[in-house]
Amino acid sequence: MTHDEQPPGHAVSPEGGGTADELSCEEAARNVFEYLDGELPPGYSERVHRHVEMCQRCYPYFNFERAFLDYVHDRGMRPARSAKLEERLKRLLDDLEGREP
Amino acid sequence: MSAKHREFESEALVHMDVLYGLALRFTGGDDAAAQDLVQDTLLKAYRAWDNFESGTNCRAWLTTILRNTFINDLRRRQSRPAPVGYDEVAERSVYPQLHEEDGEGGFFDRIVDDEVIRAIEELPEDFRVPLVLADLEGIGYKEISELLEIPVGTVKSRLFRARRRLQQRLYRYAVEMGYIR
Image 1: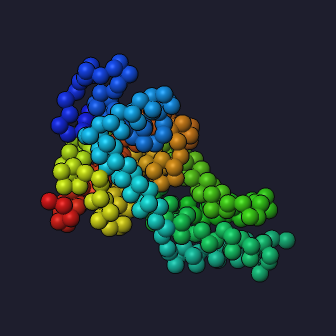
Image 2: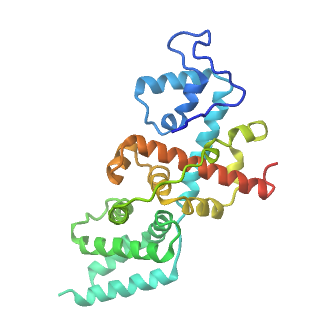
Image 3: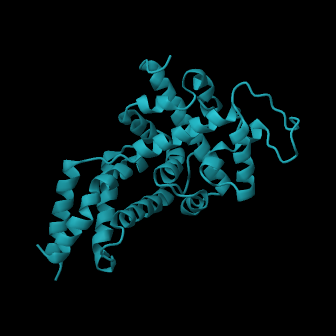
């Protein structure tokens, strides 16, 4: 799988001048969906969280992806109506009731 | 009309539109297959109605039956799965194209519902089903992996690709419609 996600304008700097605990932007971005889905191990998720909170570029990027997931969830669950199906199910129920003792 | 029939109508049939919407997403917009799926679901629910505890979450119970029915059928059909096409270009976030004018994802809200529904339903089945399970139903990776009998890594990978494809398509649509430059 190619997770070549990286917020634009980011230099990849694993050393980055920070502490050993700090993630690079590339690593944070690579885990964006697992982080937003709550699927990362707690300690690692906390590291991503700390990075994103402090990073001017990752912060809006993560918000963007979160808005996308919220949008898909909200719009994707839209119910659908079918008069034909309604009629079909009513007939089925009447039929089932007729067969019951 | 029997008491069971009346009760089933008032507690279960009222969720028909939600079930039908979900069935359309699962089946990729195949109306006949979606109707069959809803019918099978409600038939199973009707037969098991005596075991349903009134006052508990009927909608959640029905969506579980629908999901399991769909997945059982999918497993039967996919004994010889078709290879999934890989399209690296379609798998990048659209954020780089948008971050200067709309970094917070507000553009998604300007896209009409019909387009996202169409975009979900037109995803290849291998991508669509994990996306419906995760993003519409809120099911975790491990449970999806068990339901679809695929490794968790494959769930992640398919979900990643499904989301990217969806995003790219919505972006192209938004450009086409002049919602973004």
